[in-house]
Length: 375
Image (cartoon, rainbow, N blue to C red):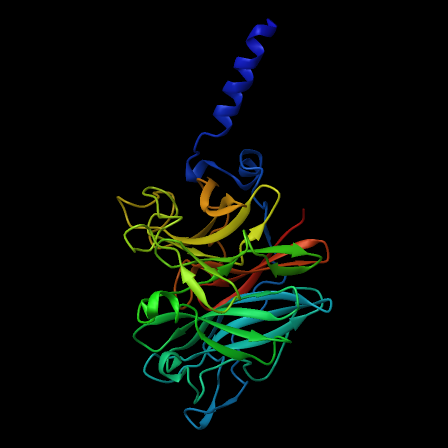
């Protein structure tokens, strides 16, 4: 070989490896080679899935209704996951089947010593009550928790409060994952209350893996959180409780990740589990919905919820470095294809446990399943 040709050949090979690939032609294994920064592959644990299903028998005395309700009879889905004392804590959304929304959401807790088989607490650990949050939580409820901890061992949960008209991103804290203190609206104090009455959801706080803990980690002196369920936006905080959304020079929310026509994420994008600081940057697993044709990905059914991965700069969480062109996770199993909302895999809980990553997700807004990745 003529060695003067070698640099050109290496450059050509590198460029070809970075070319976008068609959704239907890219396998999980191919994506590993093309996107080395991604966390891949994840394998669905078919023998154990779904790991949590609705429980018709569990009863809770609702302090607002002042009567007993079967609080997780209809659906369980969209969990957070935390490792504590060599145990996986699954903090999940559950719905009853009463009220004007045909289901109020509360947050339950289940534990496992193997990550696959869970024992659940008989009552929810977080729920709408006769407190200062009732106007924003009742009667839709408390939805879609995501949990990180700080260096002192305090847990912080972002969740969505829904009163039937408006979804608002909120924060709660806990010393033990069982007893929670409601801290209020995440954006209550930002810009003189500008965002108190606006729709907001899905807070994914930037963290790092420390042992088997997901520890919230400041970037340039501030905590960062990805949020939103149309585009992805950013917010910063000094204390993990009070958050300020990132705005552009016109005082408008500044998107850091947006839908793309003809891709799996053509209709909307929404954060998944807590974002993870890695050697390559900030790895964000995100959920996405496919739009109908002609805007959507022709290789996916319309309104399918699948998941992607994106990488942001470690020293600037607003700067996108790379983004997968194909989903790495999509509905395939019967319990993912059919349920309260069909064709949904909604990824929300990520935990490092016994030398592997466990990824917990809601299936068709009805059940909970898990997939594993062994580094």
